[in-house]
Length: 534
Ligand SMILES: [Zn+2]
Image (cartoon, rainbow, N blue to C red; front, side, top):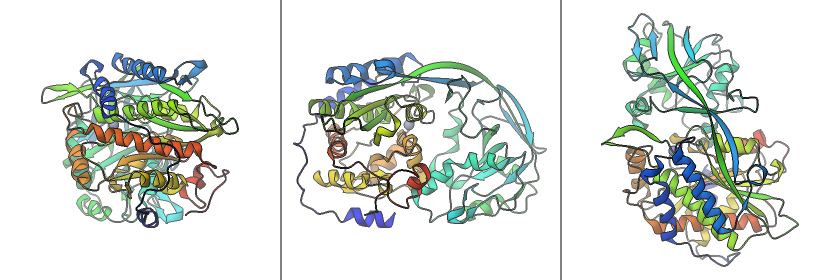
């Protein structure tokens, strides 16, 4: 991280020659898309629901007007994405810890509906395994000496200090796999003081009635990230103390240590039982996919991808009398960026082709983007890079940007050149504890070996305050709506920056490559040609 920041922060001050004439991006056009997509009529754009269908038609209509070509299934604008929706049967979910009275969902305990057992009643012994991480190259093995076979594994959710931010994000995302690879059958996430500070447990518990979704395999079965993981739940406060009754160490003590370094695990004394009932429904959602064909026949079989998820989290628990989670910034603003960049690109097509993906079910776990990355509508080998537009915070005048993932590939060069053109600084990840690198659609492409970034507005100037306010007050709340003090001119600026990055990649002599020796490039694209890190 340090080398990256140092390299990128010493940018030359005067703007260098631009590769194309600047386009004009209109604040009013940007606003018009967000105003439509965040309207109460669209009911928070839940995949499978009419509000999301209307939003998809809107994006198609905009793509059509801009002159894009359909690039979904069989020449259509849509790529179908089959999903399973699961909901908890009200009053059906409980946890029992040792001899303590059974706890209902929401009472220091939280679980989501199961995707693998419609009616569940699972008991097992529990092993505490620190942060439940494993990476031999970093000498991390939280499972060392522990027998978790057939057991639930209790995990701290953070990571030891000093790990590179995106490596930490990757490892925490793999936790479920580490557990099942060792024979564990469930995960108990421990919501300690550090997590409570990030997001209050009450806010997690408030999502109890929200549907959960997973994508379906072609044979109709549910895609499982960690097959064999049968049960999971979150414990907080006194429920954790019940779990740690009789344990060799107090929980407060291990949590305290875990805030900065690895913690050696141990078997717990209390047996745990999870009970829950779910209803399942198959729903068909879709990604909207449009294309601007490149003008250079030598390279127009290569595709630069811009993506923005269109879905949000629908109608849920009312807050101050408002039950509609409009998602104006998350991700009406990213969708507006996508549409405006599509218009600018179609007006002056670059050498390479550009795909514009308005993805479904990102909020349910990057499902639409994973579906596209795994089943692309163009040859997979021809995807040269991906730029993800998710939740640009534009409630202030941004002076810097953060490109999550840029330091892994020569995408960094393109991003820094485009930022320099606009007098913007590129900054390192200001909030590594949020592990944003694995929390949006670009990560689905990274896992398929495609260099990808998530571009975000930065913490410079009023940025830190604006981000802090949004994350603590409006993120995934009904108040992420048109009442936010959105600076529409900053939306237009954000669109221009993304257009400049895309345009540079699409016209460059060579495409972005993973850096030699990079953690992600070596893992996900071992065969791809690499370039030396700059
Ligand atoms: Zn979101």
